[in-house]
Length: 268
Image (cartoon, rainbow, N blue to C red; front, side, top):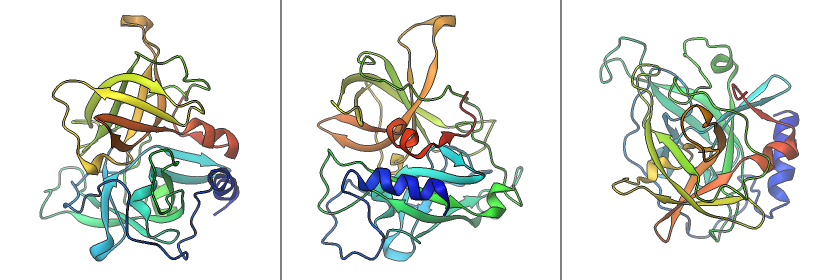
């Protein structure tokens, strides 16, 4: 899958979690996975529903950041969405602009899982990120509208190299995007309460009334610089991976991006 795949595999294996899809697995112990019908979308963007796998093993999750290196493009999502490992197919319910979400929906291939950090038995401290190698048809936009903006609307700055001082800052994650650019994605937000010592995990206390759904797994998450008004800046942070003791767990993507020399498409 190119330099990015190799470098990311090394980055993930350094954590002792990389799987190649061929290893035997015990009973699933990871976060709850959704098998509800995926919401349709008018194209590919961070925040849309995706279906990873087929049949009884399929999981409906959320498309995270689109990343690239050396003209290879990949989609990030939560690792536990891809328990089948490398080669697992990924699709989304594509509805052309102006189409009917029922009559005109077409399950459209996005690509295949190229690597996942998920391994059994699951522990909350493990890295939980998977990458999907996007097809040439998707990358070139043949029949699929593609945008790196969250929900087709939200642009962000590149990830912070150090998130240790973000406690108290606002984090939002985005899901259930449908009509890109018009409706965008559903935002769910909260405040950072803790950052792990290695900065791989960020714990967020959701705002009152925020509803959490297993389909949010993989959702792109952003963090602010803690300021208000014109001084506020919004940075890419990571992907939604779990709920732990009433906190949302966000896996920070920057360490993996730095090790692989990869960048988030569209992040300034």
